[in-house]
Image 1 (cartoon, rainbow, N blue to C red):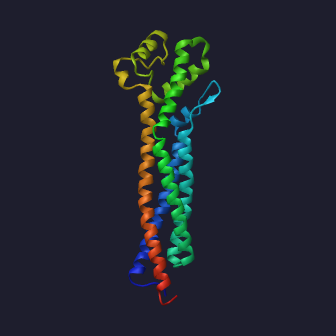
Image 2: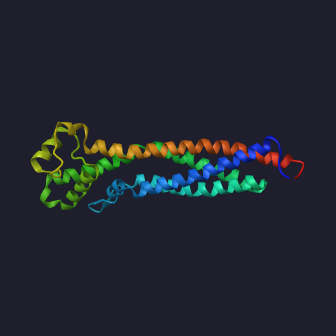
Image 3: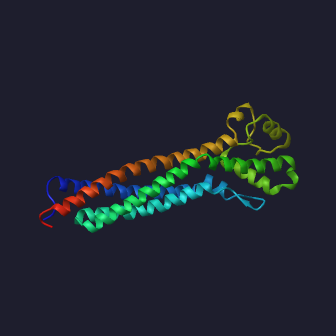
Length: 236
């Protein structure tokens, strides 16, 4: 015989919350692996120019997500088992893991917010360096031309969006043949596309992290209430 009354209700609520927490961990792990293997980002972030690798700040965020997803699945299983078994030891361990995970998530969120613009800026600077090399001397900068082609084909864009890049595109044939530059390209250039592709993915990461944080707060509360209920139960 275990806990009774409201504490028993909390026991099953905590079990189902942890089940969803385990599922959320699986979703985060899946999303992180998708972001890591996404054809557009992986093709751009694997580029090299004059021996310099493309900025990998985005991959740091993805690797953090992979670790968080794996840990969440373990902690979610621990919480489910601890709630069903009504084990104070497992619930206490579960609570401690949640506190550590929540602190890490807050720290990662602060780091991500502080670096949310740097990812696209670094990639834009990387693109501009390749673009300027090709415009200056297209014949002797084949490596830069290869990098530029990868950007243009992956993002279906061309140029920086300013008037000079339009002139350079027309005069020096910088863009692929099927990417004809016109006045509309001033609002749909590679700078805009780079901001969009990384901003959209960071937006997904932010939503997932917020939902998980809310679930974790409720789980910490319920786990402590259940742990106290087990301790005060006359059958223990």
